[in-house]
Image 1 (cartoon, helix red, strand yellow):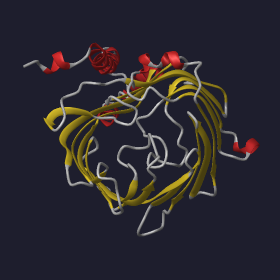
Image 2 (cartoon, rainbow, N blue to C red):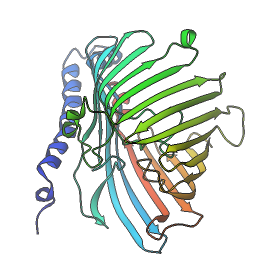
Image 3 (cartoon, one colour):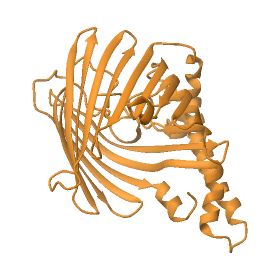
Length: 364
């Protein structure tokens, strides 16, 4: 029987090397700083690292995932793992010019986990760099990005927008000058959204200059507690409008935030879908959320937790410590459904936030 290493493709082994390089960079940055005078303040040491390397996210997770379809067949009962990281190398001290990276496990656009081999599914080792782009802020209020980018969702979430693990190769200009342009953000994105089963950026950068995707997005804060966004998106012959409103309720006893989001597909096959969700921080350890989503059968590339159907979902996160948390998630369809589509989905997730450890050690 072949070993797990022998099952990995050369591309998979190259992707595993990406996370090795990242962790090595963090380690050697820490070593180089620590080798200096022991009397140097820890804040100065952190500043020396952050002058060049700014890590905004770094975590490792494992989960149990269970999915049963409408026909009653269990299509997944498995253990999976996830490595997720976002970082950038700054060319100048203020970070106006930088090269940004986003790394996430998974072998396609809408899936950010790998099978361990325990339970259903064969083990996987894909850890691709999904985002890689040059970011420039030449003047206040203007940001230009070129490369493999995250989709800009505004106040929408992956329920009605694109999956959080997704990517688009192209260019984006963001204007954030509300005093001049009224809106807090005006964003223009142009590029290529595709290569769904090739998340590794180095297999997709040749799409620069190709075009099947365009988006115009606006966002506006209405006072201190309300934010709205709207966008028009063209993607490979599909024309879609999206809108969302987010309410922050600091004095409410039941909920802290409420989000209502929807989409209207204009052409082809006009359709409508929406999501309503609320979240409450019950105490400093426990946060809970619940929602209802209606997604039509023609929706593609939104979050893989939210396939077509009428779905109630619940999730709760318990913070065990500064670095560790446990999340439980349940999704149940309550309407008519095709036999092959998931009806019940349950997940139990353990996450180690490595970035919090780096911050505690004054490295970030």
